[in-house]
Length: 593
Image (cartoon, rainbow, N blue to C red; front, side, top):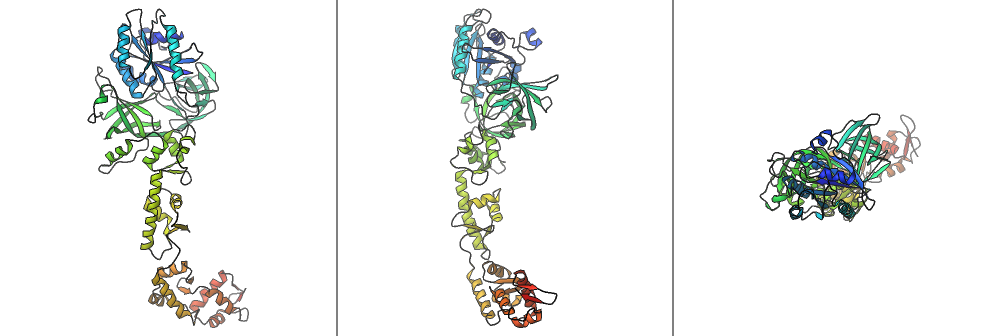
C-alpha cells in the first residue's frame, strides 16, 4: 500500500478530486458535507493502473485548521498539491508549501483542478514557480468533467514508484489521528504507519503504558499483520481512549523526552534572514499528528533548545515543524523545520556553555557515532532508543568497534583520552600514597567521573595492572625507608625471633601502622594480630619448635620453648590454630598437627 496526502488552499477541489479518483466520500462529518468544507482528516483509497493500492489522507485547506492539516501530512511520505485553475496560488497554498518545506517532503505531484472553469495556464505557471524544489510532475484535471483523471492516475503511479521503500523491520511509531470506541471491541485508533510492522498480538507502548494489539484493519480489510507505509486501524486491549497526537511505539526503541536540541531550517522568506533572525520564545511544535506547545532557547547559530509541554517519542533526525499560532492570519505562521540533534541534552549552567554546546552540535548527524561524540558514553539500550535502528545491531554495530565494556559504548577519541588520564591519575596516586599497593578502582572511577567501575577496569592496560580491586603502576614494592625499617627489625629479631616488639619500639624503628600494613601486603612482615608483628615464616618455625615438646603442651610450656612473653605466645598459638599447624585439645592444652 502507498499513502499520499492532499495539500492546497481551501475550496480548491481537494476533496472533489479524491472523490473522483476513489468513488469514496473523504468528508466523513455531516457538517463537512453540508458546508462543502473539510474540517477533519478524511480517508479514501483506490487501485492505480499498475495494481498498486493507494490511500489518500485528505486534509483541510482552511487556515483555521492548519494544525489538522499538519496532523495528516506529518507521517505521509508524498503529497498531491492542489491548485485551482480559477483561483491560482493563494495564501493557504503558500502556508502548505512552507509546511512541506519544513517537514522535508520531497515527493510532490502538482494537480491544477477546475480546468473546466478557467484556463489552467496561469495557475500552472504560478504553482510551478513556487514549487520548484518539490514537484516531480504536474497534471491538469477537472474533477467535475473527468478531464485528465486518467493522466492523474498514471502520474500517481509514477509518483509512488519513486518513493523509497520503507523499512519493515524499523521500530513502530504510529501517530494517532483518530481514536474511538467500538461496542464489543473497545478502543480503536487509526493512523499512517510510515515504517515497521504491526501484528495481531504485538505488545506496544502508548503513553508509557503497555497495550496489546487485539485486531488490525487496513483499508477496511481485517489483517493479521501490516507493514508500512499503510493506513491502519488498530484495536487495542488494555487502554482507555487516547487523544490525537499520542503514538503507539515499539517498547524500548524510542526516547521519550520533553527536552531536545535541534538545528532549525527557516522556511519561506526567512531562509535568507541571516544569523540575526530569532524565533519567538513560545511556539507550537508539530510532528506526526502531535501538536505540542513549546518554549525555545537560541543556543548559538541555528542550534536551538526546545522544551516541550509533554514528552514525545523521538529519534535523532526527527523533524519538528515550528509554528507561531499568534501571528496574524495574513502571515505565514510556519516558521521553521527543526531537525533533532540530541534527545538527552545536558544542563547548560556555566557561562558560555550554551554557545560551546551549540558549536559541538553544528556538525552533528543523526547516527550512533554522532550520539557518542555528544554523550561520550552510552549504554546500548539508550543508544538504540536514540538512533532508532532497524535492528538492535545495525547502526550500533556499524561503529568501528563494539562495546568497550559490557553493554557500554564509547566515543573512540574519548575512550583513548580516558586511558591516558587513568595512567596519569594512577601514577599521581602512587606518588601521593607510596605505602598503598595501588589506586582503588572506586577512587579512579570518581576521579575520571565514570558511571561504572567496570569501565575503569576495561581501561587498565600496560604499564598499569589490576589486582584485588586496585590499579598498580608497576611491580609491588616498598619505599626505601620502609625497607630499611624492616631490615632493622629483622636484625633485632635474629637472636629472639618470637619476641615481637611493642608499638612504641616499632614506631622508633620507623614502622607506624601504615608502614606495617604496607610491609605485610608486600610479604615482608607477618601480622599475627593487631600489635603483634613477626618476620615471615615465624609461624612455621614456631610450629617446628613446639613439635619437639611433649604432646599435648600448655601455653606456659609454649612460651618457654619459644622464648617469648605471654603477650605474644597467646595470639601466636591462636594464629597457629587458625593456620592448621596446632589444635586445641582442651581449655589448657594444644598439640601439633
